[in-house]
Picture 1: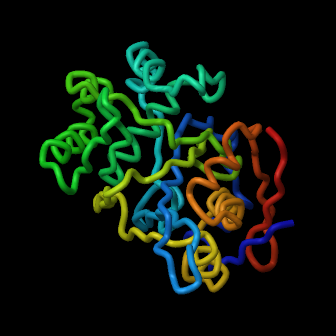
Picture 2: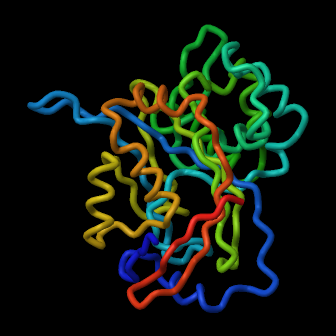
Length: 279
């Protein structure tokens, strides 16, 4: 059994295990992206890939204080027919139309990455990547409109001839929040390469810190108690640790079967034990 010590968990997480809501909360659809970039090469050559981790505000209603990947709930607009049509045009021909996850999760992933990091995973008809919100005022305005729920992703992309850029995006995991949590999510995870010459800027209204770390370094800090994370984040970092580049990670996960995972939480003397059951 995998045990996370109390001091490496978000505040209050261990206490909720013994007092789960009755009945359990219904899990809400959500999408998360593991944003990846190649780490700078050191004296010994390539240092592997780095992932972006954002720290949630301590006042957040879900895993407060934890370091997480960018992501959030699937909105109603993400599931609209126009969004599905946009995705149909965006998917690379070699991909076809994947049966899982449904289109709304792909659209939500692109939107959430843009909202939380300013990185827009989109390109024009010639394949030129969209700029990021840090360098283009127009994109910063789009970001604010999305954050304020004044527009959906389709309304922002289509008038400007942009489509989601998904060549370097891979569906990689499906986790469902344990029943002990008062807020539960049915989350699809994607690996996504950070477009070249783009930078991420965390939205300070939701996040208090942003770190680019190799999976190995993030896991080391977690083991030392300096980087609180929850189980899916830890497991995905462990899965990414062996790969020496973003390309190697994307290739390894592309086409790999993805099964839903519903962890069970068990209170232990030291913290919380996690038992993984297939959902």
